[in-house]
Image (tube, one colour):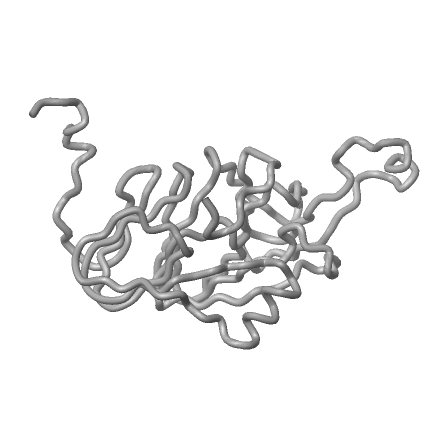
Length: 225
């Protein structure tokens, strides 16, 4: 049988080592030899002896999710085999973290990560209980983190001399050592007159970077299709 469908670039290669790699820019391949974690419903194919189980977050994690709205519904992937993860043809990226690194990520953009990484839900200063993606999952540890982004991301350096202001609906994540707070760029009187649509941003100060997606639309919650 002949077809461009069978181009070498589309064919899966035999695994050479455990862990995650980009299958292509829309999917991540994970060679499992033990355990990893992925967003619920993100597996699109697998082969081998693998089990997929909903991962509990414990009482503390459950309460945080209910109060903050920052959900990270996960499944544990256990066994030996290969699994492919994707979500609605979003662009995929792999971040390799080392001890001491901290990355604050909107949970809606997490696809898969090594079991050696830890995460905790934290609130942006000044956000109160307003929700809207202002509660992020902060990842630490040593390992790889697979992220998704609708479209091509924008990575903006942040320095003490040049703070960055980002729309709260467009931010994907930032280096967690930055000082994050809410910034109002529109007066209350202007808001009463209809406003510009850009009343509130996330202000990021310090030394690091922020990742922005090229859309202000609210992405779907993890595990939905």
